[in-house]
Length: 279
Image 1 (cartoon, rainbow, N blue to C red):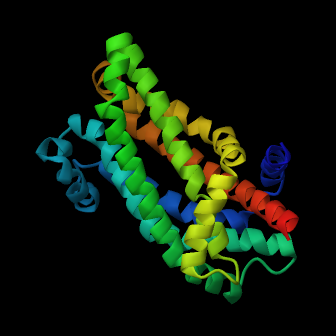
Image 2: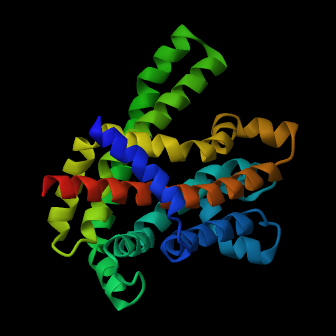
Protein backbone atom coordinates (compact mmCIF):
# COMPACT_ATOMS: atom_id res chain seq x y z
CA UNK A 1 0.00 0.00 0.00
CA UNK A 2 2.92 2.35 0.66
CA UNK A 3 4.01 2.01 -2.97
CA UNK A 4 0.52 2.96 -4.15
CA UNK A 5 0.55 6.01 -1.88
CA UNK A 6 3.94 6.96 -3.27
CA UNK A 7 2.62 6.50 -6.81
CA UNK A 8 -0.34 8.79 -6.11
CA UNK A 9 2.00 11.35 -4.57
CA UNK A 10 4.25 11.10 -7.62
CA UNK A 11 1.28 11.69 -9.91
CA UNK A 12 0.35 14.87 -8.04
CA UNK A 13 3.95 16.11 -7.95
CA UNK A 14 4.45 15.42 -11.66
CA UNK A 15 1.49 17.63 -12.55
CA UNK A 16 2.39 20.39 -10.10
CA UNK A 17 6.07 20.24 -10.98
CA UNK A 18 5.77 20.71 -14.74
CA UNK A 19 8.82 22.49 -16.16
CA UNK A 20 9.22 23.38 -19.83
CA UNK A 21 12.93 22.39 -20.13
CA UNK A 22 12.06 18.92 -18.81
CA UNK A 23 9.19 18.54 -21.28
CA UNK A 24 10.94 19.91 -24.39
CA UNK A 25 12.55 16.59 -25.46
CA UNK A 26 9.07 15.11 -25.77
CA UNK A 27 7.99 18.17 -27.76
CA UNK A 28 10.66 17.45 -30.39
CA UNK A 29 9.23 13.96 -30.90
CA UNK A 30 5.74 15.45 -31.10
CA UNK A 31 6.78 17.96 -33.78
CA UNK A 32 8.31 15.20 -35.93
CA UNK A 33 5.12 13.14 -35.63
CA UNK A 34 2.92 16.12 -36.49
CA UNK A 35 5.09 16.87 -39.51
CA UNK A 36 4.56 13.34 -40.80
CA UNK A 37 0.79 13.54 -40.26
CA UNK A 38 0.70 16.87 -42.12
CA UNK A 39 2.74 15.56 -45.04
CA UNK A 40 0.71 12.34 -45.23
CA UNK A 41 -2.50 14.40 -45.29
CA UNK A 42 -1.29 16.22 -48.40
CA UNK A 43 -0.25 13.39 -50.69
CA UNK A 44 -1.93 15.20 -53.57
CA UNK A 45 0.86 17.78 -53.46
CA UNK A 46 4.39 17.09 -54.63
CA UNK A 47 5.98 17.99 -51.30
CA UNK A 48 3.49 15.81 -49.42
CA UNK A 49 4.22 12.79 -51.59
CA UNK A 50 7.97 13.41 -51.39
CA UNK A 51 7.88 13.74 -47.61
CA UNK A 52 5.50 10.93 -46.62
CA UNK A 53 4.49 9.05 -49.76
CA UNK A 54 7.37 6.60 -49.61
CA UNK A 55 6.35 5.60 -46.09
CA UNK A 56 2.67 5.33 -46.96
CA UNK A 57 3.43 3.26 -50.07
CA UNK A 58 4.95 0.51 -47.92
CA UNK A 59 1.34 -0.48 -47.16
CA UNK A 60 0.54 -0.79 -50.88
CA UNK A 61 -0.47 1.46 -53.75
CA UNK A 62 -3.99 2.26 -52.34
CA UNK A 63 -2.31 3.86 -49.33
CA UNK A 64 -1.27 6.88 -51.41
CA UNK A 65 -4.66 7.54 -53.00
CA UNK A 66 -7.49 9.61 -51.53
CA UNK A 67 -9.55 8.76 -49.49
CA UNK A 68 -8.11 5.31 -48.68
CA UNK A 69 -4.82 6.97 -47.69
CA UNK A 70 -6.41 8.22 -44.47
CA UNK A 71 -7.35 4.68 -43.43
CA UNK A 72 -3.74 3.57 -43.97
CA UNK A 73 -2.48 6.70 -42.19
CA UNK A 74 -3.27 5.13 -38.81
CA UNK A 75 -0.92 2.17 -39.25
CA UNK A 76 1.69 4.31 -41.02
CA UNK A 77 1.71 6.75 -38.12
CA UNK A 78 2.17 3.85 -35.67
CA UNK A 79 5.27 2.73 -37.59
CA UNK A 80 6.68 6.26 -37.68
CA UNK A 81 5.99 6.68 -33.95
CA UNK A 82 7.80 3.43 -33.15
CA UNK A 83 10.80 4.47 -35.26
CA UNK A 84 11.00 7.91 -33.65
CA UNK A 85 10.78 6.55 -30.12
CA UNK A 86 13.40 3.91 -30.83
CA UNK A 87 15.94 6.12 -32.63
CA UNK A 88 15.34 9.65 -31.31
CA UNK A 89 13.45 8.81 -28.12
CA UNK A 90 16.29 6.65 -26.83
CA UNK A 91 18.23 9.90 -26.38
CA UNK A 92 15.44 12.45 -25.85
CA UNK A 93 13.58 10.51 -23.13
CA UNK A 94 16.75 10.06 -21.01
CA UNK A 95 17.50 13.75 -21.62
CA UNK A 96 14.12 14.68 -20.14
CA UNK A 97 14.68 12.26 -17.25
CA UNK A 98 18.16 13.65 -16.58
CA UNK A 99 16.62 17.11 -16.29
CA UNK A 100 13.84 15.81 -14.02
CA UNK A 101 16.34 14.08 -11.75
CA UNK A 102 18.57 17.16 -11.72
CA UNK A 103 15.69 19.20 -10.34
CA UNK A 104 15.13 16.57 -7.63
CA UNK A 105 18.72 16.71 -6.38
CA UNK A 106 19.12 20.45 -6.74
CA UNK A 107 21.57 20.73 -9.65
CA UNK A 108 21.13 22.72 -12.90
CA UNK A 109 18.76 20.82 -15.23
CA UNK A 110 20.47 21.97 -18.43
CA UNK A 111 24.05 21.82 -19.57
CA UNK A 112 26.65 19.36 -20.77
CA UNK A 113 26.26 17.04 -17.77
CA UNK A 114 22.62 16.20 -18.48
CA UNK A 115 23.47 15.67 -22.17
CA UNK A 116 26.31 13.33 -21.20
CA UNK A 117 24.04 11.29 -18.95
CA UNK A 118 21.36 11.10 -21.65
CA UNK A 119 23.91 9.99 -24.22
CA UNK A 120 25.18 7.31 -21.87
CA UNK A 121 21.64 5.99 -21.39
CA UNK A 122 21.01 5.54 -25.13
CA UNK A 123 21.97 1.89 -25.49
CA UNK A 124 19.96 0.57 -22.54
CA UNK A 125 16.94 2.70 -23.47
CA UNK A 126 17.08 1.54 -27.09
CA UNK A 127 17.36 -2.15 -26.14
CA UNK A 128 14.56 -1.80 -23.60
CA UNK A 129 12.29 -0.19 -26.19
CA UNK A 130 13.03 -2.88 -28.81
CA UNK A 131 12.22 -5.66 -26.33
CA UNK A 132 9.09 -3.78 -25.26
CA UNK A 133 7.99 -3.38 -28.89
CA UNK A 134 8.70 -7.04 -29.67
CA UNK A 135 6.57 -8.19 -26.73
CA UNK A 136 3.81 -5.77 -27.74
CA UNK A 137 3.71 -7.18 -31.28
CA UNK A 138 3.66 -10.73 -29.86
CA UNK A 139 0.82 -9.74 -27.52
CA UNK A 140 -1.22 -8.33 -30.41
CA UNK A 141 -0.72 -11.49 -32.47
CA UNK A 142 -1.65 -13.67 -29.49
CA UNK A 143 -4.73 -11.57 -28.83
CA UNK A 144 -5.94 -11.93 -32.40
CA UNK A 145 -5.21 -15.66 -32.50
CA UNK A 146 -6.95 -16.53 -29.22
CA UNK A 147 -9.06 -14.18 -27.08
CA UNK A 148 -10.52 -12.25 -30.03
CA UNK A 149 -11.98 -15.45 -31.45
CA UNK A 150 -13.43 -16.37 -28.06
CA UNK A 151 -14.96 -12.92 -27.63
CA UNK A 152 -16.57 -13.11 -31.08
CA UNK A 153 -18.00 -16.53 -30.27
CA UNK A 154 -19.44 -15.24 -26.97
CA UNK A 155 -20.51 -11.72 -27.91
CA UNK A 156 -20.32 -11.43 -31.67
CA UNK A 157 -19.62 -8.37 -33.79
CA UNK A 158 -18.79 -4.94 -32.48
CA UNK A 159 -19.00 -5.82 -28.76
CA UNK A 160 -16.26 -8.39 -29.26
CA UNK A 161 -14.11 -5.83 -31.07
CA UNK A 162 -14.50 -3.34 -28.21
CA UNK A 163 -13.62 -5.97 -25.59
CA UNK A 164 -10.62 -7.12 -27.65
CA UNK A 165 -9.42 -3.52 -27.94
CA UNK A 166 -9.78 -2.93 -24.18
CA UNK A 167 -7.90 -6.11 -23.33
CA UNK A 168 -5.24 -5.17 -25.87
CA UNK A 169 -4.78 -1.72 -24.33
CA UNK A 170 -4.53 -3.18 -20.82
CA UNK A 171 -1.93 -5.66 -22.02
CA UNK A 172 0.05 -2.90 -23.75
CA UNK A 173 0.03 -0.80 -20.58
CA UNK A 174 1.14 -3.83 -18.55
CA UNK A 175 4.10 -4.45 -20.85
CA UNK A 176 5.01 -0.75 -20.76
CA UNK A 177 4.95 -0.79 -16.94
CA UNK A 178 7.65 -3.45 -16.87
CA UNK A 179 10.08 -1.44 -19.01
CA UNK A 180 9.30 2.07 -17.75
CA UNK A 181 12.23 2.19 -15.31
CA UNK A 182 14.92 1.20 -17.81
CA UNK A 183 15.70 4.77 -18.98
CA UNK A 184 15.17 6.09 -15.45
CA UNK A 185 17.93 3.84 -14.14
CA UNK A 186 20.06 4.34 -17.24
CA UNK A 187 20.62 8.05 -16.55
CA UNK A 188 21.92 7.34 -13.06
CA UNK A 189 25.65 7.75 -12.67
CA UNK A 190 26.40 4.20 -11.58
CA UNK A 191 24.26 2.48 -14.19
CA UNK A 192 25.89 0.47 -16.95
CA UNK A 193 23.63 -0.51 -19.89
CA UNK A 194 23.29 -4.05 -18.53
CA UNK A 195 22.51 -2.86 -14.99
CA UNK A 196 20.01 -0.32 -16.27
CA UNK A 197 18.22 -2.82 -18.53
CA UNK A 198 17.85 -5.74 -16.14
CA UNK A 199 17.59 -3.57 -13.05
CA UNK A 200 14.87 -1.52 -14.73
CA UNK A 201 12.92 -4.63 -15.69
CA UNK A 202 13.18 -6.01 -12.15
CA UNK A 203 12.01 -2.69 -10.73
CA UNK A 204 9.11 -2.62 -13.18
CA UNK A 205 8.05 -6.08 -12.06
CA UNK A 206 8.42 -5.18 -8.37
CA UNK A 207 6.47 -1.94 -8.73
CA UNK A 208 4.06 -3.30 -11.33
CA UNK A 209 0.82 -2.32 -9.58
CA UNK A 210 1.77 1.28 -8.68
CA UNK A 211 3.36 1.80 -12.09
CA UNK A 212 0.25 0.54 -13.87
CA UNK A 213 -1.73 3.02 -11.78
CA UNK A 214 0.48 5.83 -13.10
CA UNK A 215 0.05 4.68 -16.68
CA UNK A 216 -3.73 4.36 -16.41
CA UNK A 217 -4.09 7.70 -14.63
CA UNK A 218 -2.35 9.65 -17.36
CA UNK A 219 -2.86 7.40 -20.36
CA UNK A 220 -6.62 7.47 -20.92
CA UNK A 221 -7.17 10.86 -22.70
CA UNK A 222 -5.46 9.92 -26.00
CA UNK A 223 -7.34 6.62 -25.98
CA UNK A 224 -10.63 8.47 -26.38
CA UNK A 225 -9.41 9.63 -29.79
CA UNK A 226 -7.51 6.50 -30.76
CA UNK A 227 -10.39 4.10 -30.03
CA UNK A 228 -12.63 5.14 -32.97
CA UNK A 229 -9.60 5.38 -35.24
CA UNK A 230 -8.52 1.84 -34.47
CA UNK A 231 -11.98 0.28 -34.25
CA UNK A 232 -13.85 1.92 -37.14
CA UNK A 233 -11.53 3.94 -39.41
CA UNK A 234 -13.49 3.07 -42.57
CA UNK A 235 -16.68 4.38 -40.98
CA UNK A 236 -15.06 7.77 -40.36
CA UNK A 237 -13.87 7.90 -43.98
CA UNK A 238 -17.17 6.90 -45.57
CA UNK A 239 -19.73 8.51 -43.23
CA UNK A 240 -17.90 11.69 -42.25
CA UNK A 241 -14.75 13.26 -43.68
CA UNK A 242 -11.51 11.34 -44.26
CA UNK A 243 -9.53 14.32 -42.98
CA UNK A 244 -11.01 13.77 -39.52
CA UNK A 245 -8.63 10.85 -39.10
CA UNK A 246 -5.65 13.19 -39.48
CA UNK A 247 -7.24 15.68 -37.08
CA UNK A 248 -7.85 12.98 -34.45
CA UNK A 249 -4.31 11.65 -34.82
CA UNK A 250 -2.83 15.15 -34.50
CA UNK A 251 -4.78 15.85 -31.30
CA UNK A 252 -3.80 12.44 -29.91
CA UNK A 253 -0.14 13.18 -30.73
CA UNK A 254 -0.29 16.41 -28.72
CA UNK A 255 -1.99 14.75 -25.77
CA UNK A 256 0.36 11.76 -25.83
CA UNK A 257 3.39 14.05 -25.74
CA UNK A 258 2.31 15.53 -22.41
CA UNK A 259 1.05 12.18 -21.14
CA UNK A 260 4.45 10.56 -21.73
CA UNK A 261 6.20 13.38 -19.91
CA UNK A 262 3.91 13.13 -16.89
CA UNK A 263 4.23 9.33 -16.81
CA UNK A 264 8.02 9.40 -16.77
CA UNK A 265 8.05 12.29 -14.31
CA UNK A 266 5.76 10.44 -11.87
CA UNK A 267 7.69 7.16 -12.32
CA UNK A 268 11.01 8.95 -11.68
CA UNK A 269 9.60 10.25 -8.40
CA UNK A 270 8.33 6.80 -7.42
CA UNK A 271 11.74 5.35 -8.27
CA UNK A 272 13.49 7.95 -6.12
CA UNK A 273 11.21 7.26 -3.13
CA UNK A 274 11.79 3.50 -3.37
CA UNK A 275 15.51 3.91 -3.84
CA UNK A 276 15.66 6.09 -0.73
CA UNK A 277 13.63 3.63 1.33
CA UNK A 278 15.84 0.76 0.17
CA UNK A 279 19.03 2.60 1.06
